[in-house]
Image (cartoon, rainbow, N blue to C red; front, top):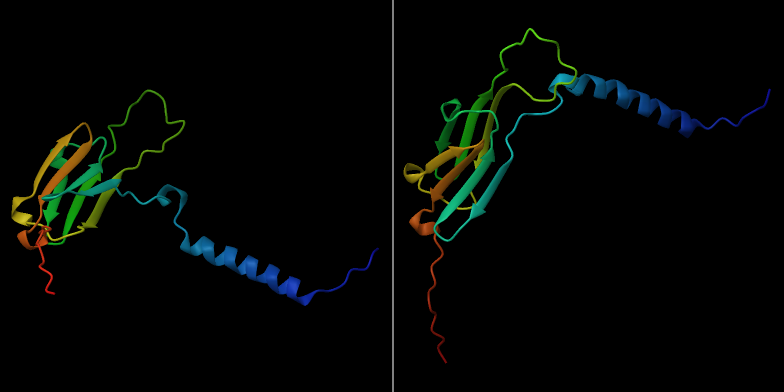
Amino acid sequence: MSLSRWEPLSELRRMREDMDRLFSSFTQPREALAEVMLPAVDVMEKENDVVLKAELPGLKAEDIQITAMDDSISLKGEFKEEEETKEGGFVRRERHTGQFFRTIAMPTAIKPDQVKASFKNGLLEIDAPKAQEAKAKEIKVNIES
């Protein structure tokens, strides 16, 4: 039997790691809920409008709700489970089902009453005209000498 030196700091570190693992098991979502369902979104600011594109594969236009405010656009919908097939079971399932809600802040004020949207092949495109005061104005400034 060999003797080893007792290191109290090593013991404390190991205890802390054990406690971290214990508490993280309570706060971490279960494997099935590990990923939050939020559609991937791109926001582009153009001269006169803001364009938002969101990936929503498998949805239909009637499954999506869009709400526009002066400073944000909200998307709401639900990924529904396909009808169950009687032929065989799943070997692997990674596609998610369930509701999503996402609010995207606009980089500038928009006109919510003039927002237009189109949906094709799982890609939602929203065109939000900028509010008049938000458009960049070029003003020539005279320099006094």
